[in-house]
Image (tube, rainbow over the protein chains, first blue to last red):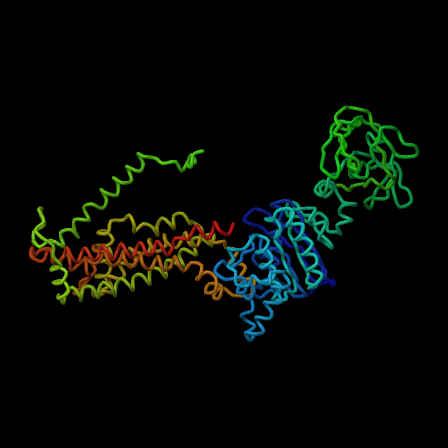
Length: 365
Length: 271
């Protein structure tokens, strides 16, 4: 039995493909009704983990519980989960209606009731007039919705989504993200969502796991993953991060004073547990938590640097500032409130400033 | 602006080569129908006159009809058995990680290159050792061996042509392997099955060497032709029979290819 109230409990799961260690001792608990994302670069094991939830792969060791039931030896067609495949896997020989009704055969519903269920689904995915279309007459976004409807009509306990938005263009993807999130709230089903797109994961998830090389590095809410990554790998995977070497000078009430190379002393309460004075640490700050100015500010933590380079990103620009004693230029994000003038490469001296607690102290690993 | 891209531009020497190729391949064969409409019983130029006489004569021959029925029975049985095996062999080859897959495929395709006479003698020795009477059944066994590579070669592209996650989706939606096969796999490979049935039927229908070694008292159609070649005055009728077989075989194989034409097309459309 599970020792907790988790709806899906992945416990010490390992998976080997031959000698390749695809999943390395992963334990994750997912709550009922949660939108949970598995985020990682390709080959990190996120899809393998999803396929183990669906029953297409079996763990080499460890156990997966869904709704309290151990899933070892339970074949895919007996699991209370449904999957939306990356390729959508729409049945090409059936029309939209028959695709959506595919899983209903066993329920032996009267025809009228079955048609009503399919109509309800067609409305839900906003394709009410598409019932008689063949699969190969549909666009990527439409196929994706049919794959969703085909799964949701069975009222699964868990819906698994394998990069379902990966093949869509940016505009459609953003629209589908919103729709997916609204849909999940409507149907109240636990979603497990695999993606390599960090923005997508941050936007959609209640909680998410960052995976790398078959391990789960950190499982947390999007906010905490972004603001307080536990180590350098997580910090650099999500968003842009500036790293500095440092040393713990003193522990204060709920925080620490760090002496960072190139920056001097700084105070933060974003610290890992078991920090000891004198310990070498890595401190990090997001580009948008730094302010850039031509002149020194009064009353702020600040450091002088030289403007190296600029990257124009539309709504904001990234400026790269070199600081004495720091090997890599520091990225600073600035909102382009005024029209950008693009004079970012003039080597002019600038000041970088930050507020207390803007830095995060990373644990080892 | 040119209408032709680099790869699609016309290539005169290649077109000439293709035409020459077809002429060399099929011109000799076309003499059969030509002389089957000739009034003379001798196969030589000049042609003496046009007649349907040989075809009419053919219709009146009891042994021809008997041999035709034998060939149909062998052909239909062979095509069903070899296509049945072919479907599952092709599924296994394309879907599962098999140890020694390469050599296995090589062995399956071997009957295509091993001389028929060797297979025929080997089977004859085996069957007589086992004390089995030669009959149309033994011919069918021989034909299944000959036809299996054709069936598998026809089915493999069909299986490779569709996304295996479609089968996974069926399992995911609650169907076991049996229902998944009938509701998804079978309808998707069905054009390939038809093509394989037609192709293996044609191969069996036209096959001579195996039938020569393995048939008992009931001849197949090619066996019957062979037996009649000794009689010069029968020859025009044999030409007529051969012409009919030729046309029917061509028609069946082309029909099979046409039914199976969208192997690649469905795949491209799904992009």
